[in-house]
Length: 291
Image (cartoon, rainbow, N blue to C red):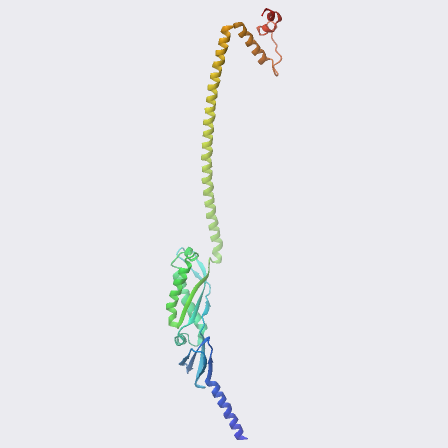
């Protein structure tokens, strides 16, 4: 019975030993074989590998491209318009031994903290060297390239390769939005007032020109009318003079009829004058018979 127990114990110890000496590396991983905290082997190819049982242990690291979202960062560009910037980075472990030595047991979580400590100064340095209009315009692509290049140089010491850096959002702080909106509104109102003032000035010039043109046209028309009336009066007087020279009595008769026509019409049909007045000479029957 004791032999059987010993055999079972030996078998179990053998199985445990074999199992503890075998490990599998996934195609999405890299593995480090550590012995008392020191790196003894690097396993980058997927498959079955072996290590010394109970003495060595295996640490796995992701071999894929990883993503890091930075915390919102306050940035002050050249024009002093403070912005809140959100960025993210794509990164991967390029040298797993150097990565282990740099971040220690904290692994990828510690690497993200170290990498964010690299990205934030790069963001402040690059975005602080330009205006906010450059950050909010199409020039942002070039700025992101500068930030990525600066992060690549500093991240190499961590055994990390920075693949890309992108700015997700660049907005004004919540407290400054209302003030900025009011300033923009006041500026637009000032521009509108300037446009209205220029429009009123132009309208006044047009009205003054139109009034002057109207006065000139009326004056010219009045002048032409006076000339025409003068010429007509001259012709009429010439006709009257010629008629008077030919037959003075007929001319007097014509003038009397004109006077009757002008006097006896409308509300002026009632006259209070003497019947013997010369005004009625041509209305008397004996005068008409004599004529």
